[in-house]
Length: 505
Image 1: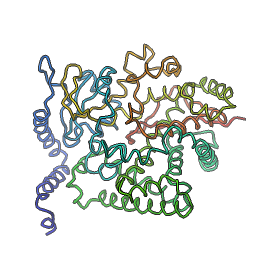
Image 2: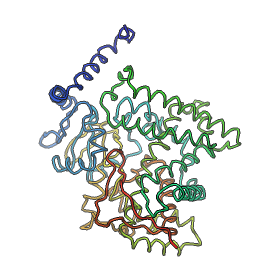
Image 3: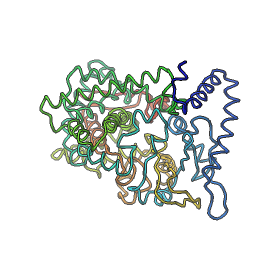
Image 4: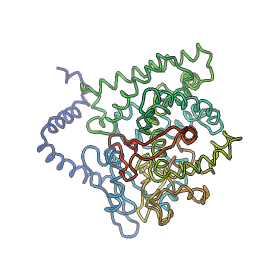
């Protein structure tokens, strides 16, 4: 009876999803059926999206489509480090993968980026990051994934707290949270025993900083509620990365636990932000970003979804990003201990201009962070975006509107520009080269006006944290010969290991 309550145009997609669900219960049948479906769809996609060499007519090297995710998002993120090298070996410097059924052209060389990103201000981000329906419900309208006039309108409304000048004002706030966080780790964590898990122990530090940037001072009850929501949101994003049935919009009609969890979270998230807005008003914090964003919604400049998704992006999605940036820096400093002494010396030399030092992009501190980001990119592949006009890459004619992604390891590590010691940790290389020279050779926050909006706040958090650590602690590896463990379940590259973190006498 329930089936006939579904609108007629959706009956066949739902029957298809039901069939897929039944097939996937039987492993042998699943593999056999998947092989057939994948082969048929692969033939269709190669016909539907032809890309040929302008001289010899040869088809662009392409990873075979695999139903239902193609190579995304598991292939791009969870297995991205391995696939970056594997796909490059198999297909060369420029090739195509499938994210769902959307083609993405992989760029691995600086000359590719120079031609493709010359007009990056006119590029369009892929709808829902090419991740499908479930992504659309969590982040589809966030400022990082929208484009054109929609992006300009939302960006103008939310960027002020994240501009370089504004971000500098948060240094005292960042210092306050770092002290509070380490006091808590000393009291309740293993830091009192001289141990630190950089990713796990520092996971919520950037979270609370960015929360205060957006909301102002929250009540203890609201902070507890926000903390409770973090693992719920983390579990939902794992479903985005896993893909499968949830890629398809028809999956919203299925009575699944994950759909119920999504509905519960979205309701809870909306109610929480309503309460945060009212709290800011009643506390006289009328300049808090949450108040200004709600005013934009009231005026019709921003939609409720754009507001909720953008704050979600800044808090929850970028929680993983900033945590990855923080944690690998500490691993490198623990492994290459002499840089701790050099940083202490540099910090002492700039003691009279502490805030300016934190903002200085020409310091050894900044170079250490850049070098960590170079060797351990937070994601193996960038967010897909398309150029408005035709591009020719290595002779292949790429139609307008085709999405491009950057292979971070191909650019940051397997690039002749970095010399014979490309795989070594040597921060000084960033002091030897200027910003213009580095352009198109180093991928971290992207290029042009579509760079990550939170980059200045992220750098202030990481730099201030490192200063706190080198002033108060000595970092070292538990076992200098051990392999550096990586968390296989996070979409962002996080270490999974402890280091020694002993308080200085």
